[in-house]
Structure formats: structure tokens, C-alpha cells
Image (cartoon, rainbow, N blue to C red; front, top):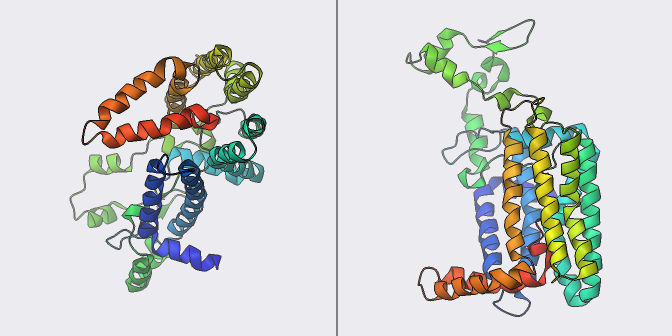
Length: 376
């Protein structure tokens, strides 16, 4: 059964992706439409998150096996990103890392739904116990990832991104027909590399100039060929070098960042959600963490060149500061009234009325549920 389903997904990747995107869009506009609409919306979104990861893994395997083609019937080329190289290498090296990453991702996918169910079925008091438990588990999982990665930055997402864009794919049946229509010499890996010279010491393969000129119909130039073959430093760097090891200061900053959500939750449980102290303490911890990590990564003893994965993660963490505008008591005191005015203004504009409606629908969720503004 699973084999048939996997075959269906691979053969109809573009259509399946369109259905996923349509359902995901629906989850954004469902809240506020009927009773328990936010619960239905979150349930659909959670399910789509799990299904999406499974579909991405199926397409990734199919792409590596050469079973995917674009809409013109040409084989799809896999452009492995630095993020995928890094996490893929760690997952290959350690099955514990892979299992931990999957468990952490599963918690991130389902935490909002779990909180909603607990609030509706078990009440407010039990909600904070469950939220605390989830944050404790996430702290333990992230610390495990920090250790298994060799004291490197723990990114927000720890599962590889999709290798191919399903919207650009054609039917996998075209791949089979194109492979069968191709000549044996073209389909054979040995034939493809027969004209290449292989270095006995390095094992590297080099293409003769004659073949380069034939492929480009004689229009190739030395500079053009060299430019085309040039590689980004990250593309040839070892996978684990894409994120640098922390020094003592950076490690302390990363631990603070990992502990930050738990500190905030425990502060809320002790002092209440409308007390300023948990909000301010969490903000100070996050600011200190960011400064310590940046100082450590830019220290003189380290390579000062940019690392894409590090840069993207630091950028993501910077955007997390916006969540403080949506958390009580700051939201109740400053943000809510301003957002309400923006929503009312948008409601009077034909093209912006949907935005105003979304703001009004999501305001209660930001106020009522912790994980909507947790950024953890």
C-alpha cells in the first residue's frame, strides 16, 4: 500500500503539491469562520506538515534515482543547498541525530494543536503544565543536537529542505520513456565517463577540450569554461565546516538561546502572563544570547568569511524579536489597539479587506495561545 502511494506521489508530484498548497492556504483563512475553526485549521496544518516532510523524502529519493523530469521531459538536476548538505551529513553520521531531529520537528509541527486540545479539554491550569513539558523536551532535544553536532549552532529547522520544486516537475512516466528512448551509450555511466581522463592520484575526472568544443558547438572559450566550472567555496567545503564550532562564549550564548523559551514559560507560571518581568527577562536573555554568539563567531581567531547557514539562522533569530510585540503584556498595552486600527482601516479598502479580516481573526489566537508567539 505504501509502495503504491509513494509511486502515486512521485508520478503526480506537481498535482499533489498544488493540493497541499491549496489546503495550507485554507488553514490561514479558516480561523474565526465557525466554532472551533482554529482547531480544525491547526489540525489540517499539522497533518500537512507531517505529510509534506514524507512527500519531500519520497521526491528526494526519486530525484537521486533519476526518476524525476521537468515539464519538458528532461532529467531534473538536484541542487543540494548548504543547509541540506550540513544536516544530511549529520544524519548520515549519527542515527541518534537523525531520530532527535525528527522528534524535534514533530513537536514543532504539533505543539499548537496540542495546546489547543489541552485548553479545550483539560483547562487552563493543565495547559501550562503541558506547555512546560513540551518546552523541557525541546530543550533536551536541542541540547542533544548541540552535543552531537560538535558544539555547533542548532538551526530552527533541523530536517533537510526539499531537493526539488514539485511545481516544476512533469510526470515520472516521461522519465521512464525518455530513459528507454535514449541509446545505451547515453544511459550508461561508463560511456558517459569513457572520454574523461581520471587522475591516478587524486581520482578527479577531466573532460578533454575536444569534448567541450563539441558540446558547445565550438563556441566555448577558456574564460567561459573556467567561469562555468567555478565553484562557490561552500560547495566544495566539507559539510560540517558549513557551521563553525562554538568557542566557550558562543556555546554559552547558544545554551541561553535554547533555554530562553523555558525561562519564559516558568516565569509566566510563577508571575502570570500579564506581568512584565517574564517578558523583559526573556528579551534580555535573547539579546545577551545573540550578542555572545555574534561576538564568538566574529572573533579574530575564527574564519571571518560568511557562512550561509549561519547567516540565515542568525537572520531568522533576529526576526523572532517581532514576537515580543505580540506577547502580553506588551501586546495588551501597545500593539493591540494599533493593530485594531490597522484592521479597521483595511476593512474599508477593497483589496486590503482580507488582510484586515486576518488580523482580526488572529488577534485572539495571539492572546490566548502561547505557541502562536513563542518563537521556539
